[in-house]
Picture 1 (cartoon, rainbow, N blue to C red):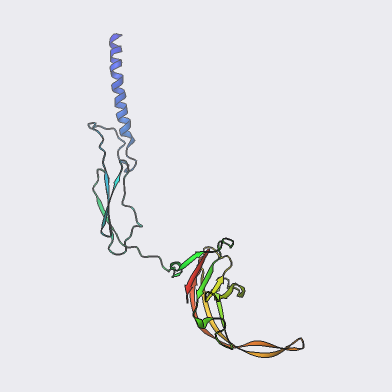
Picture 2 (cartoon, one colour):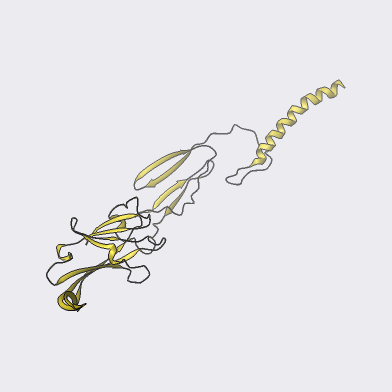
Length: 244
């Protein structure tokens, strides 16, 4: 009985230690999916590696320390460079550094134009958040009445006919700023708000017209001439300032 008691007291700690070692080895690496089998080699202290993230971009070098247990990968397809390529080296403990050269990625087809590069400001707080305001500063010859018998007509519409044209009440000339101002209704979301601004010179003459038994003067259009037209992209929620 005494011999069995002594063997039991000595064997239990050894068995418990072996179970702990096997359970740790069975866990495996969750990053590289390696390991998970019984450990048969000598037990050594686990090192504390420091991984260097070596990135060369535009002639500058960045070193970033990655803590133990974090593995970096070279799977960033969105990395691009403007001219000479992008060299990245992602390495982790126990693996060699692998350099990958990323070629520049072509931009998507189409363009945002120049509206987003112009001066803008937020619309008034009491307006609808999706309305847009366009202010176009024009030369002196594009004012409403440049000469007797001539007036200026300005329109803002979608030449494709997909977007609603602005009504006359939403277009006015600001004499203090020498600019035509357009205030839209709430714009449709998800649609490119590209409008054509057209300036026309309208020629007219006054004629006497009888109305309700009286002769009154009325302006009659005799012709028109397109001075110019330009395309602008409206920005929902912003007031856009441009020069003709």
